Length: 69
Image (cartoon, rainbow, N blue to C red; front, top):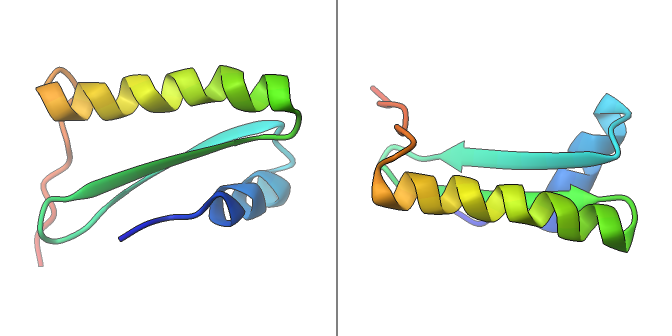
C-alpha cells in the first residue's frame, strides 16, 4: 500500500484545498501517509504534520483504527 502524491493532489483538488494529508490503513494493520501542498512552502509545511502523524502512529501516541473484515 503506497498512496502517491498524485492521490493527495487529486484529493486536494476535489476539496478545493491548498494542503491535504491522506492517511490510509489496510486489513493487516499497516498504514501509509502522504501529503500535498500547492506551493513548495505549503508542501513543506504540511509535510511536518504528515511526519508527526506517522511518528504518532509508530510510537502509539496516536491510536490507529481497528479494521474489521
